[in-house]
Image (cartoon, rainbow, N blue to C red; front, side, top):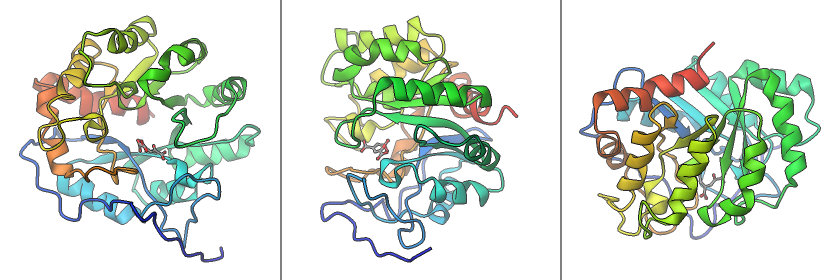
Amino acid sequence: MASQRFTMDADWLVFHPNPSRPSFRAPPGAVDAHCHVFGPGDVFPYAPERKYTPCDAPKEKLWELRDFLGFERNVIVQATCHGADNRALVDALQSSDGRARGVATVRPGVEDAELRALHAAGVRGVRFNFVKRLVDTTAPDVLLEIARRIQPLGWHVVIYFEAQDLPELYDFFSELPTTVVVDHMGRPDVSQPVDGPEFERFIGLMREHPNFWSKVSCPERLSRVGPPSYADVVPFARRVVETFPDRVLWGTDWPHPNMKSHMPDDGQLVDLIPKIAPTAELQQKLLVDNPMRLYWSD
Ligand code: 0GY
């Protein structure tokens, strides 16, 4: 593979160099169910069609963070900067001693042999991204075709969209034939009431579709008040956890791509968990039982 040099975007914030050790002790077997690996770019080049060039965030740094935060497993989600080239993801999964599973990006027409190879490496889902600043649009029938292709493998679909786009995407989402995991609670505007019409639409989506799950992640992206409390996001995440305790996941989102306002301290993010999942039973479901069921059932 030809080595290539990449320069990260000028306004890019690098992940926190020394996060604080969290006071909250995650239960044994806890899973960080939303994080990424980036590059390193000279080994695993960033995609030509990418909308941003990140800092390298290699697997070794992710394992270090996992151990430091008191977690045991990771779910690594393919980010748009790597396009549908899943080599960095697969390399991380294969070096994880079975402690990481993955969500890939695939293009229509992907060969069955490639899907089988991704499965063998530990991939258990594909991601469809609808965030306009991150990707060019893909037609819904193309995505449905991909969803049908991955269904026999027992995989699920992860969807990433912003709350204002839910009305136009709702019918398409309803057609998805697999388990569907929504990133970051569908990115609500947390300056609106937690029982206001926008978030009710998202809660309604989850209620109407028992195959839908949600990650209660990314307070750093949604919050207006910011760290360390991220207090405006807490009621939203807590409502989702308490309403759908068996269909929620939590993740750090390390290395926090595209954060322009601040770089979160991952230890502080972990310390929010007891605020959004206030009982030991909810924490066990959120951090262990649910991700294990979805990613390690075999
Ligand atoms: C996230 C969020 C972002 C980026 C990506 O795939 C990506 O590039 O997911 C974002 O910019 O909001 O969850 O990592």
